[in-house]
Length: 91
Image (cartoon, rainbow, N blue to C red):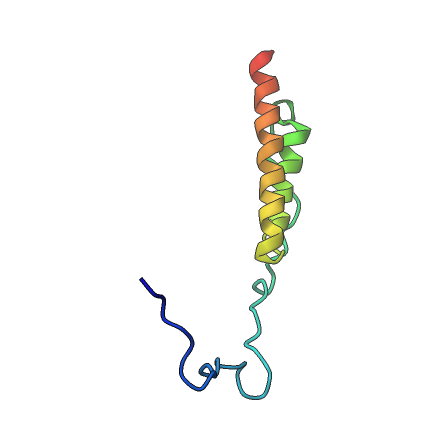
């Protein structure tokens, strides 16, 4: 069985190029005023855990990053929370 070859004449159809003017649509940034503030006071300092607070703050801060950078922040926060919960279960 033979495979089809290139088109007659040895040339291929042209691929579409970038948009006219050489510019692409700008990627939207975070909404105005989207910068998170400090963690809310929940009133019970005894029940708080510094590693959990840091992971929650990291996730809040990730909202201002580009989507590709958010993934790394969320993965790091997940790992911190997973490890912290594992140590709490062992005590």
